[in-house]
Length: 63
Image (tube, rainbow, N blue to C red; front, side, top):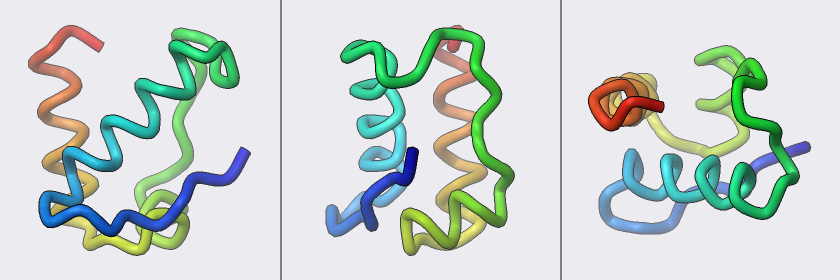
């Protein structure tokens, strides 16, 4: 299930929003393993730093 490239000014927020939306709409089951960092960079067209920031934010929110 591919993700869309991010166009928002804060790309980490956009990536979190997409993954959260997939969980809420039941396109991605809670607890399902996410794509690798490299795959997320390629799918979302964002930097590794943004992927890592998104990961840290989601962890701090208890995801």
